Length: 335
Image 1 (tube, one colour):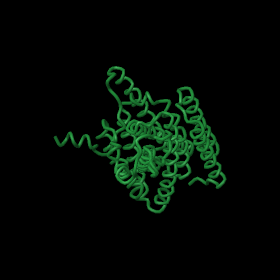
Image 2 (cartoon, helix red, strand yellow):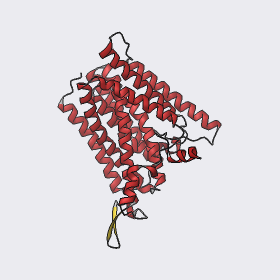
Image 3 (cartoon, helix red, strand yellow):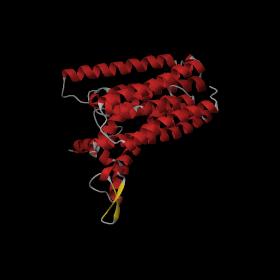
Image 4 (cartoon, one colour):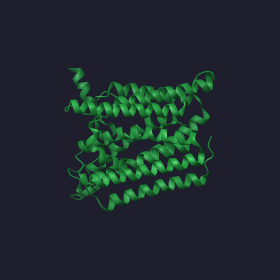
């Protein structure tokens, strides 16, 4: 186990909080349509921060720890792209005005960080107390991978989201966004705006992604600090990445397939680790460097194959993938 001092924890968390606060302040003070140049500059900045942190971390704690961080960061970054797909679907479903998308994305990132911090703490405690959790996490990832692959050509049905449906049924909702506020007084009565529903949808999706991403990165490392840092730095650049690759996302037609392969691979890695630790030391483990190589190759093949596919077939477009059969598919199956 790495000896991470409270000072390092504090500085790392402080850096993440400062960057998030700056992002929130920018979204609140200057709501606007984010242009390509601005998004590109911010994306480069956040990636540079993540790499700089990784270089320092490698220097301070050794190459093995550094490899774990960069591998975890890569896994979380690739999963966050799928998260972007769902954000696009949510914003399209609710017709979120461009000037308010920045605010929605920042909220989604903050909520994702909070949820993942909670899951990281819980996951680390469980792994330390019960080694069989490695097996359970591995099985969870394999099941998730199978479901994602089965429904790779579908998108999550946001309107069918249980939480969103309950909110629509129980709360008074205005027809317009009322200047980007969460609630407004209409004819003397307090009502919620569609932006409130958007945030509810984002929150429920963040919860689902946290349930997948935390076991995935624990498959790379059992160090809670590395898990947190990889998640935090991968999520920090998500808002800028959304505006940068918004047009490209639709061309990544094999992303769900690639992610399902990565999740299945990490699931197998976790199960092998459990077998090695609890059953027999003769069971081989997958080294972190091998994991990094596999993930890089899968991502590279996914991107190249997707671009080749869409170039040859312009009508092809990507889907975020779904873990369950959507209501639309259920209706088609019932006919």
